[in-house]
Image (tube, rainbow, N blue to C red; front, side, top):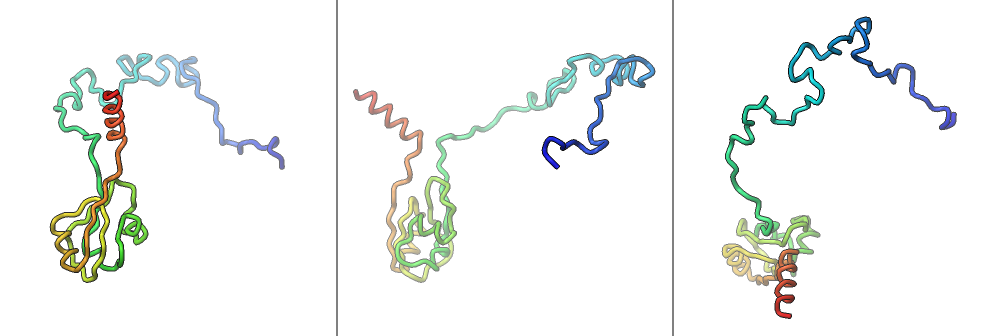
Length: 164
């Protein structure tokens, strides 16, 4: 069998019903649209949420809130999760251990759990409780700068342009 000989199986394709073509067709006169009214007219498609002219619900309710486009989202790691790691713990090591995905603006260590071994933690943010727990176990904490966002790059470019 070749591609030129392919065709749909019998009964797979049906002809389009032609409405409004006489009473004998069964869909003559009103063409299956019933009597009069908005739904019988052409171009009657109204948008989602349309309530027949009544003020729709989405317009009756007040607007609220906003989405902060400058928000930074950090991946969270608890101090107790660092216990199995050794040496220098940075975002790459955390990603390798499966503790973070690495698709946010940085990593923050939160103070949950206990740390038994001394580790050097290099992350973007650390809570006070987490810092105390790491230093109590004999480890150290180094903060690394968070990645620069496109908004900060644009702001820096505008400042540089203004100085010229």
